[in-house]
Length: 294
Length: 248
Image 1 (tube, chains in turn red, orange):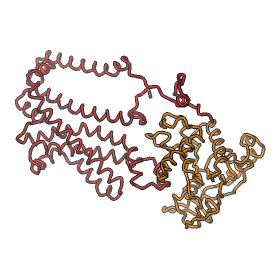
Image 2 (cartoon, one colour):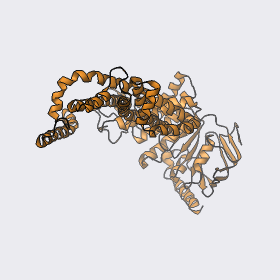
Image 3 (spheres, rainbow over the protein chains, first blue to last red):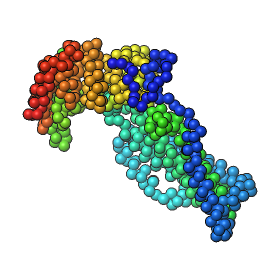
C-alpha cells in the first residue's frame, strides 16, 4: 500500500526536498495576518468604546454626582494621583492570589491523583472536597483569621481554598476518562499502575487539568480579595481588597473603580499565563489549543 | 480454569461465561487456534465475539470449562486506532516493547521494522492527528507487529474505515501474515472479509452466544488474495455463511 495517502484536508504539498518530506502529510501553519488579528481584537474593542461612550454620556446627561458613579473621564483623571497608592496593594493581592493559586494547583492535583489511584481514597475524600466547595468562604475566613492571624497568610489560604475544587474535580475527571482500550492495552502488556499513571493517564488528563487551572486562576483572585475584606492588613501593607473597602467608606469612587480594574488585571494576567501554558503544551495534539485553521 | 500449553495458541474446551448479573454471554464453546492460523469470527451483535476475544487475551476468565493459552505474546488491535495523541508514530509503535522493558535498541529496531512493513517508515515523527484514518489504523497494526506477537487479537479493526481502505487493509494484513505467520483471531461484521482473510470462519449466534458452525475458507491467506477474490467458491461460501447466520 502506498504511503502517499493523505488526509482530505491536506492541501497539495510543495516540491519536497527529501523523500521524508514527500511522505509526511503536513498542515502548513499560517502566521496570523494583520487582518486576522484585527478581526480578533476589533469586536471587543468596539463594544468597549461604545460602552464607555454610553457611560460617559449618561453621567453627563443626568448629572450623576462623582461620589455615586464616576464618569470614565473622572476615572482616567484619577490614574495620575492614585497610581502611587495602587501599585503596592496590587502587588500584595497578586502575591496572595498567585500563592493561593499555586497552593491550590499542587494540593488539588495531589488529591485528585490519590483519588484516581485508589478508589477507597476517592470514596473517603470526595464528599469533603464537595463540602469544602459548598461552605461559603466568607464564613470560613474569620475562622482562619483566628487560627492564622490577619494578613497575607490567611488571604493566601482563603484564595487556595476557593481555587482548589476546580483543580481537583477537573483533574480527577481527566485521570478517570482515559480511553478504556488504551488502559486495556497497557494491562495486557503488563504495565505497572505507576507506569500507566505517568505515561498514559496524566498526559491524557492534561487538557482537563489545565481547564481546572484556568477556572482556578479567576477564583484565586476572588479568594484573595475576599480574604482581604475579612482579614484586613494584619499590620502590613493592605491589598486591593483593603483599598476597595477603605475607598468605598470614603466615597472615593474613581479610586475604587481603579482598584477594581487593577484586580481584574491581576486575574487576567494569571488567566493569560495559564492559557499560554495550555496552548504551548497542547497545540500540537489537542483540539482545545489548536487554531481553527488546523 | 486457565492453563498454559505449548501446541495450540488458544484452546477453548466447554468454556462458558456468565456475568455477575446473571447474563450468559457464552454457552459452552469449543474452539482451537493453532500456531499461524487465521480464524475469523462473524455473528450478530451480542453473540459474545468480544468476550471470546478478551478471554483469548487473558483479560477475562471463563465461568466454567477449560481455557488453555499457549501464546506467550499477544497483541490487540481495536476497532479504533487507539493511539496516544500526544506521542508521535514511532513512540506509539514502541509502546508495548517499552512496557515489556525490551532493551532500547531492540525496541527501536522492532518499531522501525514494523513501520516499514506497514509502509509508514517516513512518518515516524508525525503525530496521529496528522495522518489519515487508514494511516492511523496502520500505526495501530505496526504497534501490534512491533511486539512480535504469536497471536494477534483483532476486534473489528477495519470497521471504521471506508470500503476502499478497508479492502486494502485486509490485503495488507494477509501480506503481513505471509511474512510473520502469526496466529490471528479476527472479529468482523463483514462475511466477505472474514472469508477472504481466514483459514476458518467461526459462525456465531446469540441468546446465549454460541458457535453455530466453523466453516473452512476456500481462499485461505496462503493463496493469492487477488486471484481468489472473485472466485465462485468464495461467493458461495459467503452466501452459505449468510444463510447460516440468518437461520441461527
